[in-house]
Image (cartoon, rainbow, N blue to C red; front, side, top):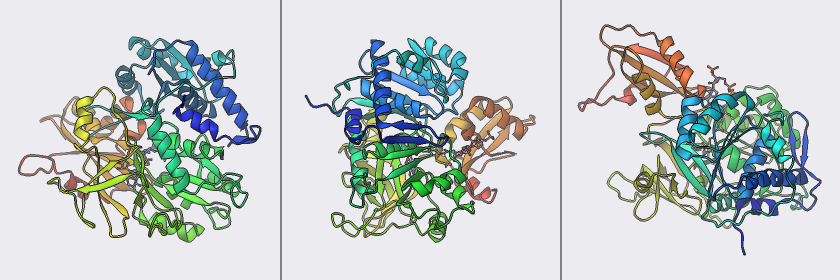
Length: 519
Ligand code: MCA
Ligand code: AMP
């Protein structure tokens, strides 16, 4: 029987020499491919021993560690559905995700066990384990008693592998359901498109990836981890991004992936030179727009041209600038700054006007996509899913862009009200909802404003109820007590009125204009 389990495909790509180093951590630990195989088997066996129903969700909010990655791979191996959660989320946010996804298993850090387990048990979760970034916790203690042999669960390409929560234009977060097939097709496409080489490659030099991103979103969890594993490539593993240390690791690495903020921060380091980057083959950026200044400055300082690509939680990667001239893909030799490149070989992309018409080359409209990487729908939200797809099966990304005569895609904006700050998504509607509930607040608007480090950050503009005095610091402090830290607006202003159009709708474009020079 064929098995479309993503883990099986990743496992099949492990090098023949299982004693070779698969992961080297920033603090000097080494994990062999055999270690990864055994550890994922033990954790998968632990999950199996719980007799969970098929399709059970395993929700995980833990600090980044190799063991956290092992837990992800073990969840795939055992055939369950992985649900990663940003470590910055606080109790109200976690309560929503756990209540909505109803995971059978929750894994959290020991420090958060008290409040997380309370939320989980209330939601009907049967098993709560702990996993700390120093390799302690009940998950590994229990897994230590399990066999290190495990046959990957049989899964079809269409079976769920992960749920990633992402917010929409309105309402609460939606769980994007990604299948084994979605992720495997994307991983295979990118392996080819980005020219990954394994040690058996033409120059005998295998790729080594510097992994410095968090592992609770698509970029760090899927693009980076799958990219290295499906190629049997070693990873240099950093629990936290540190520009100096990333630059130091480049001498023994070949590939780096980051959100634009990481590139901006490395550019401030005098140690970033041509010599420091000479061993590197490829720098990839995505998750947020890469400013042309960053693209150009990187080229001047290092001699390398950053390859920008574009994706979403719902779709994984959609477009990419080319790695190299490849005769299979006509005209695709140049990485062009300010563009996100071409639709990936198996992705169909169209630009649609407000009247629903397919737009010709050069015209700006809504980007819609179709392909084997596009998700199955939103968890338990069939109506929302139906709304986001066209009758002929294209997914409406909410991004606005155009395609030029050579086929390069440029993202020019978003129809969804979203701020992307340092690669994390912040939904103004969510923040405004919290502010509007505060005592003395009449109304608020949160807008994204350009920021030199995070690319874009939120600014809150608030109107007080008649006869009430509001303090911006108090508003921000109250938000901070309830929401993930990256969502907190960097500034808050209490004003007498908000600009409105004739329909009475707040004109956020005018607010963005007014505050654009703030940082
Ligand atoms: C941290 N802070 C932020 C952000 N990160 N504020 C706004 N935006 C942020 N992204 C604030 C914290 O609230 C805190 O403020 C202060 O900065 C220090 O926090 P710390 O955690 O120490 O910050 P850091 O370690 O310097 O983190 C910055 C970072 C991180 C390394 C850029 O944000 C990061 O790893 N970003 C990558 C996100 C990512 O992987 N996105 C991929 C999504 P205070 O002290 O006031 O509390 S996947 C995706 O988008 C798709 C599919 C795709 O295409 O890839
Ligand atoms: P998320 O689904 O939370 O991971 O965020 C996906 C969104 O990030 C996309 O819909 C885009 O708006 C944005 N995005 C990702 N990559 C890029 C990029 N290279 N340039 C501009 N926006 C991007």
